[in-house]
Length: 499
Ligand SMILES: [Zn+2]
Ligand SMILES: [Zn+2]
Ligand SMILES: [Zn+2]
Ligand SMILES: [Zn+2]
Image (cartoon, rainbow, N blue to C red; front, side):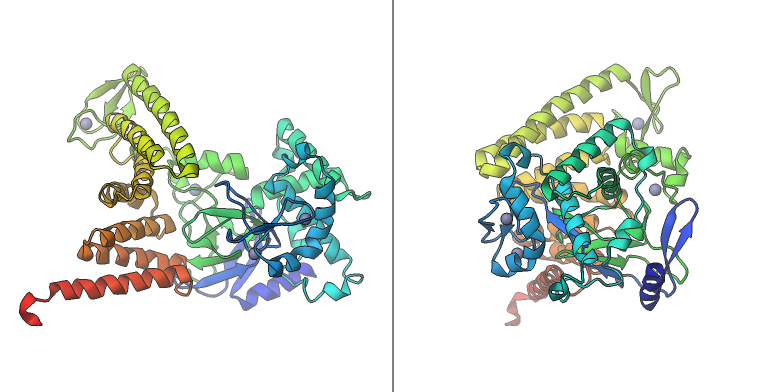
């Protein structure tokens, strides 16, 4: 019955679910979709804010302005009475428990545990809807917003190792401490934690900064590809999946679950570790082929010592050196290892100074981080291929440091250096590439390089209008900036004696 209702709902959207023996449930199109078109969107069944930056967020809308703590539990934050009231029927149970919980236990209350508590509270409200009739208008159980869909998610329980199972059991116990429900089955809670591990989505803002986590049971049907035809973004907490390529009728909708910048081995490892499957997308099936070896050695391997040479290096048969495949120059393994260990030392120091810097937002800390990352960069230039991801990440750190320091010139230089690697590492229409063009354009604008700014912002718009849609405030601002830059560029082009 549930399944039938879901299929009917999806068919109205031009979609259908089918089951494949290898991949389980898959989302297919029954209509065609053009790039930028919304395929499906969904509000989270449950969600919690997660502060990676150390800043707190409103429990309901995830904003970080004018927050106040719940006066009873002193644990959950709200931006105002509207958000607090709308959350009360969930929070009241949690609130009682949290107020009684010892301080020591509160420390273990991770976003995952809180998400699980909320999942059970929602289920309870759904099950007892007769008693909660008055609330029905607030929590409708619709086709896509239903605990039964959560039950249908994959859990991979049999593939999880003992250590992880023990951890899930401990987490389940904490959920029990909070909920205090006599009938709660700890084994079921533990199994649900394994479901969350592969199905929870990180909710990000338009610039892909994480704000929280949420469960979107229908979005979870969509499978992964390292070269996806769709992209998942968030508008507030609403998950929105848009086509990034023309998707014909009868095609599987695919998004990426992981950071796709990485060699095939790195991507496969990440998917196996977090999602417990092996990817067989068009990029992954090339593993071990010449083209893939070349790509992977460029992105994650060593560079040639000959300055002008862009060749990639492969290990020799005796495993003592790496040989450039273009000019034949050899680099000793022990020399490479020595530089690599220096890189590690400096990177750790740089990370440390950046951590203290971001909290105090003290310029001297940023300067310290800047000189550390410059040392890392210098070493990586000797060690890595010019298009290496590690070098790109160091330069991204330098870009951020210089932006903090309002040193637009150096920031722009570093931004430009990263772009060829972004283009390689994020093939197709990828929001990361679009955002990097956007940063580049903003810096060019600040430095008065109007023509370059128009070029960069145009590239940013070409990608981001597809991944983010054209109606969000984020894109409207970008379009406005582009208009402004175009107007100024045409003004600059006019000969001086015209007016
Ligand atoms: Zn709020
Ligand atoms: Zn409270
Ligand atoms: Zn893949
Ligand atoms: Zn070479």
